[in-house]
Image (cartoon, each protein chain N blue to C red):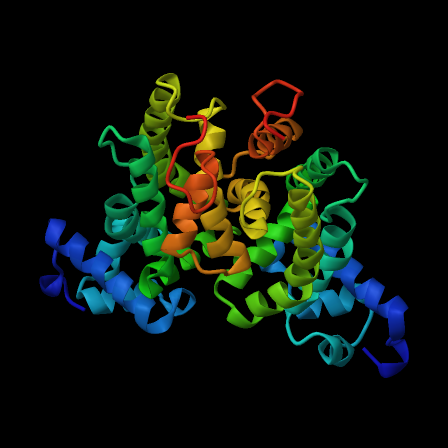
Length: 198
Length: 198
């Protein structure tokens, strides 16, 4: 591939992330190579490596830009029960979408034996989201709208079980499961809309 | 390696699992090969492949025999709060032990992009444990000792957050975290020994 064919800038960044995402859907995470991403995105390999040190780093940006940021942020409408429900339903939607699921388990699987990728994932994706979520949870606790406990623990009671299903048990994370989970953490009795002791 | 050097039977099975476990500690999961396991265990590769179709299958038995079965079973002393606490402390012990951690994340990481391994893991390790745990949880619920909800959900509220820490956030699963988690799911106020509404 000659340099004249090489595209640069934001358009090329988007083309690269799209190519990686598409290839993952077609071949599965494990079979995608940097070479294949470069060819599909019609950029030179040096361009690709100038921005991303590894395939894991490319997929980290795919997951962040295309999946996590649009779907997994705790909303703030002022109604915490409704916001938590929407938030965990977001996980359900993501974890049952075949393509998103493939990207997530591919990236998380690779991160288990790649400490550098795991650190990038925490730094670039998790930390920025966590800070806002935990502030929102702590504020709702201060207002007596959520059970008193470490806000980190409360966050993990809500997102731990869906991640467990995605990465360990393989059980589906349905909308019904998401709602039952939020009700349980809020201390609501099953199949009952009222807040108990809230 | 000649056939006369090849050991067979339970002694050789144990030698193979021990060799795989040791190699994982020395090299990391990703770098271990079937070849290296055979050499270290002093068995022929045909012997190894006769019992295990893949490296993942060997490590599945390592994790089941050496890690999960001795450490991760919900005990039954008749005191459910105490049993849950001991159970989740078992996860904490396992997930903070560097060698056990390496085996678990290696195997779970590989299972993310190996559907056959993931299916074996569920069939041979998870299902047998789940059945007993869920019966015990359901019995305690029937006796009014645990909050009323789907026993599967209750189990996942307890084990989901530790798995999330191991595989996603990388935060440590300490004994204090384990205890706080059990207290939260039991509906106990933080840093208070009494059961609320139990």
